[in-house]
Length: 456
Image 1 (spheres, rainbow, N blue to C red):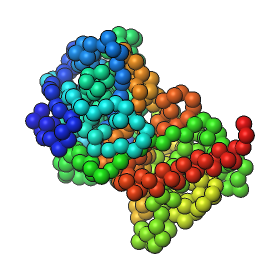
Image 2: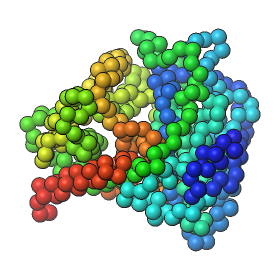
Image 3: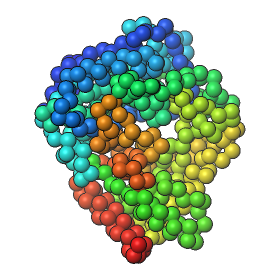
């Protein structure tokens, strides 16, 4: 497994793998199988989610002690979240019933690496090489593993990057964040978060969505291969302040679109979607398709009846799919922005309506079919995860990136602003020409908001 990891990094000489160890739960748990629900199998064939957390260390910090503490506390955290040390497999005697199976001896791969790159370059907002960021997150080991971790020292061991790779079929963003908070608490020596809830009977499937979603008689391992990142891709971070988001909300409220309430997330997604469409819009492009869509997750935990606990470990998110005219999204001025915000807000309302009877899940299926022939911009992450509060005992992260969006064509990542001002951060990967075009559109949109706002 370590050899395979070294091969993955052999194309990226800036990162050198020092060691890969298997971290076992301590204390170990008994053999357990968690059946996948329809929420889980939706993600069975998708690429893993990869996040990188960048930390600056104090001059007095002992990096070897930090690495040892990370490894030891990981063993404690995995004991609480032991299914994440397990493997995805087809349940014995079935053709399409998958499960997350843990048995004694299962463990999580923890890699230590070093890099000659600089944190200020890697963690900048300005576009930088996506492949360099991707090298800081490990691949998943063969055999159905769902979690792998990597600690890479930077700046002559004065900084550290923590890379987290998680298979989405094992848990959603809320579940993986819960695990990371628990790991950080054990490492920092503070009270950990409440233990996860793993009861799969909390998720009902009265209409048979599982069989609609899940393929049959295929090897699950085929979905776990991580694609290489195009060496030409750039990864950029774009920041919207609270004031900018409020201006978008004010414009939406005053518009004739009559859209539902425009939240900060709706404002962010609307602005980014319209900018992305404007930057990539080409006359006669996309084979003459006139519509496009934005797909983003909606947490169902609190919306089900009865509600599912916030600490549920697994997937409990549905998809909201906003559909709009390509030409209207790419319209100059505020027109494209308002079209996007109205479509996003309507998608949120539709995806959460009557969820207590799983009506929204049926509607989700219809929307997936409807959007199948359209170009799609997908969204990863959420400002609710609070990733910038993840402190392992050596301070808050200087930057957090969801680098896996660089492996997916047409995807953006969303998080809360790291300065804690109520703003948002958006990360995306594009070729150089596409990144230049998006940056121009984004800067123009933000400048328009500043002009419209007038003197403060």
